[in-house]
Length: 168
Image (cartoon, one colour):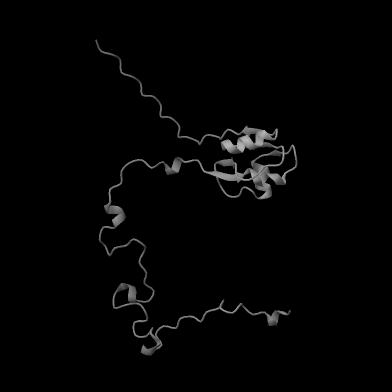
């Protein structure tokens, strides 16, 4: 095999759609842009949600209530079956799970789930355990150590206003 003999897989490369190449091409005259107006012009684009100056739908509907989504705790799930790659007696914590690639990405902690069969006696340190995972780890003589999450930094409390003296 040589570099000059390499070719893409058949069907991987497509011919670019040629617009404005006459009426019989199926993409002639307006070239798929419809009639006249802002979107028919070259270089023109309107942002998503723009309704031509009309008050957009997202601003027309009422916004009420509390959304708890920003306060949810997001865990990276790791199944007990995946922990069989470690030797007996190993202390499995977040750093080790990230090092071997079982826990990737940003999250608030690690949760061990009970999917799969565990065959090793391990010391597992995680932020949360499912009941079945805890049972499988402890059945083999391993231990489950729950790591306490660091609380999110909160805004400093406002100083208390001095109370007015009571009038009699």
